[in-house]
Image (cartoon, rainbow, N blue to C red; front, side, top):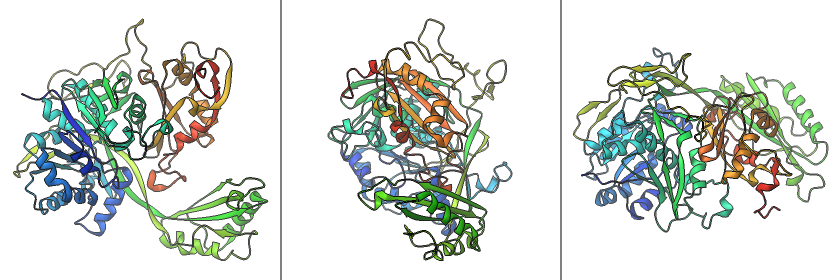
Length: 601
């Protein structure tokens, strides 16, 4: 008989996360499965370049270091480990684990690597093309008795969903349970971001110094409780969970290879100290296509920043730019300039009197973006504006990466499990899929086998609770009571939290408030026009807005803000990590009625 609860912890949110986290999680309390998420779009590019230089590499080496210290401990405690640390070379990591000498049963999930077939699949000629596989391969590996499951590219949440499938015996049709586990997996996948790390209201936490890593206590119906080991730092509150829930999502339909999760059905409740319950999550059949991470080297990049101090900042910047552009050999394919006016008048320190002028070059030819570009700045050292100096010495060009998302039918990847005994088992694609964008006349349901597809979840009938999961539409009713009474002009972050990040070239900002009374104000305030006014960088870019009243949140997607992805470095915050905090710092009109219990009055 299966226990009614499965404890799944996380010990890594990225390649480079706290090295001691695996031991902390294994020794800190009860645990059944320990997961680690090591992959991101930039990581796949880094690992791909590693493998191009050395075919024996291409996996997350820090995971192997953690196992060298902790694998025996995990076996002694009966904790199984699931990680996507295989990167672009999972078989090499499996071989390295076996060479550690600890008698662990190691399984491999493979089939995500579509690089050899990229051309025929219409994905171009990338350095790497890796499909986001689902959780059923992980589940089969655990069912076959694996102590350690190594994957390449799977969805981050699959690291949690797979163990739940294996433990509770869920099948493809258990869409609500799969969706519930997906939400739990999404919450814990980024490690300490669920327990107070990078939290907008961090000043309110009692112990923000060293947040513990999160745990999802999963139940047979897919509901869960997010918590952490006793005595660890940080906090687990509805706020910290909401912050992670709205991180790097697109809209109310959160698509995955096994289920499309309806984020507009999530319910959160504080169930005790450092315990947040997640219930009510509904799921729909997954889309017919899988997302593919396509990474390539886009060319060569060089950057130079010069400091402008004191008076006449704009004139100094204009002179240097004219001189630089007139110099021989400074005509790369792409050149961008940015002037950061960090200076203040009558400054008390030289740094406070200084602005930064940055020029970035990109070109397919390393020589064009390299020393010739840097040399032009050096030659101006004694013949440009007064007070000329740069922040770093001139340097050569470095290759930069480009990320693009591709899509292939679910049946294209050969999703397989190499079990600990060496036997290979194939994982069939889902028998029922549902297109994310409905055709006229209703949603398109595709059933390749098995039962008929379940119709998509619709908002409740009139009179029931309102679900606004659709993107923002002109003229949408923002809710009752908005705009009545006096207001004060204050930072948006006085009431609203935010967390932002990247998805390819798009930036995501999740905003939320902690009081029901404040949500109609937030939902009415955040429109395309407001975002363009508060964040002028977005003025010419497409913006999509989704309201999620069940968790008092509004999600904003700014398309193209990050250019061709994080490795392209289109802006000084290439992953948009600080974008949400910039938005929170902007001043807006806040109803005084929402501030009556706050110190701001």
